[in-house]
Image 1 (cartoon, rainbow, N blue to C red):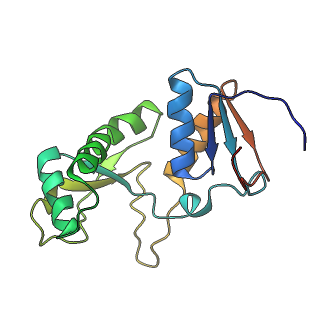
Image 2 (image 1 turned 180 degrees about the vertical axis):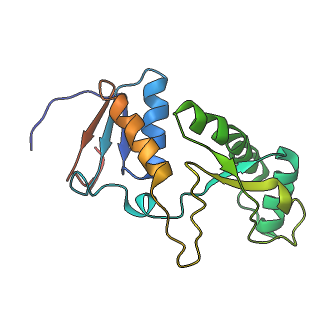
Length: 170
């Protein structure tokens, strides 16, 4: 296929990470191409059906301690990368609120509560969805729907190509 187009940013995949990247780049003024291998209406992969938990923190220093405890004796991720990661966690709740997330709520859950700093690593959900019920661990897609809606709102800056798997970069 021959085409002539210019974009500042190309994002591969329209899951939560790809949508978040496209939104952030567009909010910073970039013209974005978002490539998705699935047909329109079927995008999102696991992000559209998972529990919709979003990582957050109420205490950055304690969360760094927790992640370092998870890392154990390994050298990756580096301390510098952990700092970047936790800085992002600190922004997630307010960022989802800025996207119009209804009813974001922290809830108490930690996979390894015995580790130092565990109580600071706090997930949150939107729209009252905890992703947990008596019958399943499935989510209602609330967080992904917010991301997808915001990509659509930025359609002048984000162009989405469905059924467009990225196979190589030039």
